[in-house]
Image (cartoon, rainbow, N blue to C red; front, side):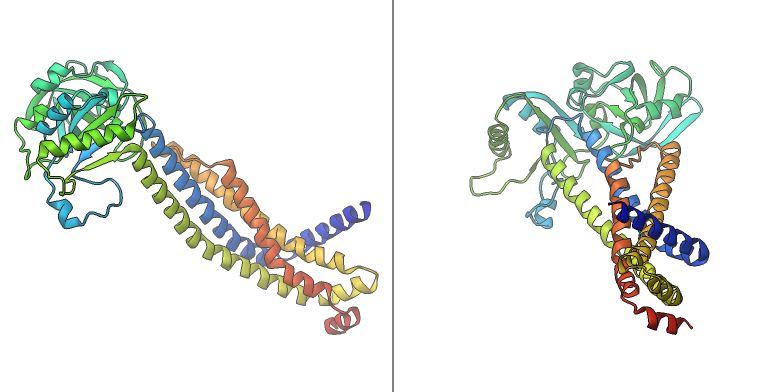
Length: 415
């Protein structure tokens, strides 16, 4: 055992000295591996961060929450031309389902809004995503208030000119002024701010922090609905501990009857479940990871070939020294480990530099952006393991060729 430890120590020392004596060559070798490891870890960390952010946003929703609309949130076999001819989901549909479908815990009608300007005195915030939605959204999305209140069901039904703003919108519009009770202008009309949401951070789509919520019936007063109007959706949260499959079947049956669809006619709507949306997101994330591996793999391949090439050059330059070492009794294992360690050390150092660069960039990104960039232990371990594996693969053939050199021929070649 002691012999092998001594062999390891001496081989390691020879490898370090060789790297020190060829600084430019070492730097160029490190560069290729650093870029490859950096690319893989950066892509994986970015995708993991996006995945975590989206799922944190969806965690506030019950996985059985359904979006009833003419649009499909995932892949579908229904042709595009047929989907385009589906009727819009309107407020009358919402009222019918609210009255006739049992086992609903919360329900809301939402109009897919557009960016609007909000004005308060002399200050204007442009491009705010105002979401016209009925009061049920508060319970469905688990919204939390930092100040004030959310609009009531009565205000929602009457279309009161009230608004609840996200924390970011409140800061941008009012600064240090208390927003509650203040009059603002949106859609060219006066509205009263009655609530400010707690900060939630970025998530799927626009952050709630940068949004504003108004009653859907308020917007329906002056903007058209129907086939040519604004698209809408019904958001349904079933009661807990019910058979979701049976609930969905009853929902479709009653809605088909309301729309006058015959038994042989296909649905002209989609029931999108959050669980299905999560599956679609998982598929997208997997695709992004795969694409990242493909792109970064080329960088690693170039880095590995670079190390192998430099190790072959190193073997050629030190042929004379190898012959002398073997003539003095150095075994093939010593020569093999000497060059193999050199390749592994090069690769591991490059990998560590790549990991440190990703870590530094993640710190900068977290400080400058309102987004949590996650560098997991698994990704760090993966980067370290990959760099070690590349070093072993790139260095094994040059190391074997060095170990098999005949001492006499090696000394003669070196002379």
